[in-house]
Image (cartoon, rainbow, N blue to C red; front, side, top):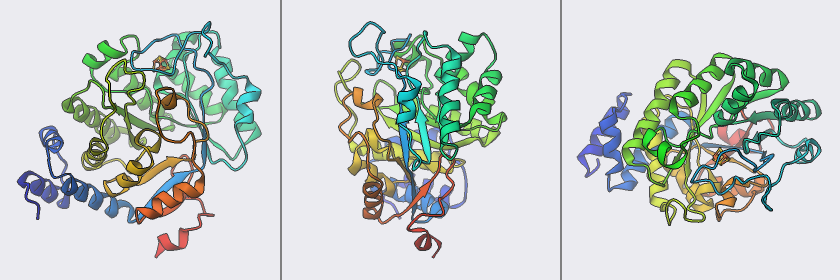
Length: 364
Ligand code: SF4
């Protein structure tokens, strides 16, 4: 029993397997009883996953920070002639890979001097040298850039990437599906219709993908809810999304807002995502943006995955993220255990690895 009658009604709907509407989602953001909200979300997560919490031994590779765009919220991108600009060689990229990895996550700037062939060669070279590593590469923004460079269809770009060894798409570049926010912060970047079209095309080609929401800047709660509902709608149609990853905006150099959101707002957003996205298997607690402690707490608020070891994340750290650059597998397991979870190693497609030390505990 909750004191908040609205949350009581939400719990009843969740118990009956009923879906929440937009207005109900909005009311969740004004709920003051954050623990009750977390309890509802945790119940949903436990019914799906029990105490299992997954993570992946992965490496994030950001091949270049040179970008033709200058999105207002981005502290990562730069121009070619600036002292902080870099563009990795194929050899340098391969040196970031090792046989112990289950996934590489490749995202970076839109570098006009690299032909699509080079982006393709990155995928092919990693796949040929490390066939066991699953390659998750290029956001919808990059896919759109390649299609425009090559003057060809999204299908063609995705098909060629798949043939080269791409396994799935990351969820970045979605930001917030709001024209108002897009015009204010990233007017030259693709908006919701194109992002959704690219992911839908990927799903139709058998390429699974992930989804994100960048929150904690100028967006409203309505825009957060509308964003989640657009993803829910596409998932109803294609069932191609693997996960939803709320990304807390890093205030960084303070160009957009002066402070990042509080941990309470992080936990609330995770919980509401778990409640609203009833057709998503996985809600990710991304420790890079939330920090270790909040990410671990989020495992009690509906999240069932802690992302991965990452290696050397550059994008959020360019915006002064205070989390470590990478994390040891043992530390990830420790964070999961401290939240009473059972740590299980997975690959990019969320298949549990048979060598997972805690597998027998999970099957009990
Ligand atoms: S957010 Fe992406 S597209 Fe925009 S400037 Fe940064 S790297 Fe370029």
